[in-house]
Length: 377
Image (cartoon, rainbow, N blue to C red; front, side, top):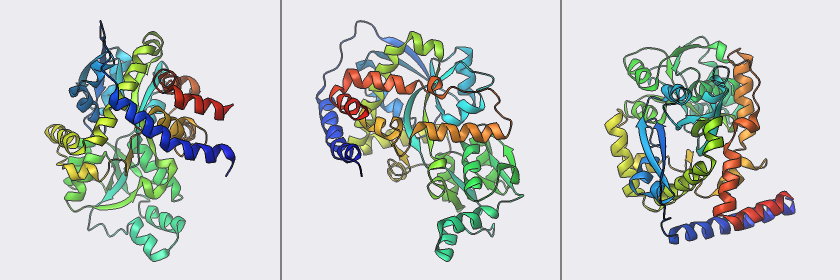
């Protein structure tokens, strides 16, 4: 371990604690005018934390009048492109798959990393799960190959051109197969869930609400993103456009502050926050998630950094365990090899979040930012 790595590991917990304590004492920011921001949001339990933050007044506190607009996941990019949203919930796969048609898009915020994708099969499928194969074979690579090989030639129901299809692709690749070795059936998550429950397809991958519903229906978890490893980790946040980022950079920095305040509140008030999230989610979908269900995944298979420093070390630092460029390049190469994306992508330009996070830290976490700069230098 080199000196910088050791110093970083020693200082980071202290920095996070200091920043959390400071944030809890910070007074509301006086604003003469609020910046109106239209946010398109898909009803998943992770993104619904934003509504909790809005209800607690955190976005108004930082100068943002946040208008929340609920949309299906697949409609968010189109709404951003059409100018009917300012930002919208998205994951990096969709940025890549829609790149040829919409090169003006920018990933302006990362809210969390998602490690909860899972390929689900029916209990009577006759397939052995990764967990069962690992117990029998005792080797990770052999267990993955044995698990994934069972899918060859079968129908897998998911949502094409999204992180859900990418989850299938990452699992297949880790087990030695290609996405072309299965027959992908394309439906949005809720329609796909209903179809799978009525007997269509051999396997299914959707969002976490759909995964939880299938578990409650007695379905088997064939293989998960955490079984697969880092190439299956998804980066999720908020999409915008190059023009909006340029013209509203300060507002996006303020929005980042609102997200950190939100996550600090959620972590400190889990029963109340998760109760509200489950109430919202269950009224919008058939997920039937409970407070305990959300506790079982929060910062366990979905990870929510609560300070800029924590986010930087996780995503922006090349040594971070979830370094953004590695994942973006994996997704781009996957879809490029399939001919689904042809235009070159300047990852530094598209990933506007890095510059916005650095500006946030300069303004709101100067001590942590000074440490990061000293290490980088």
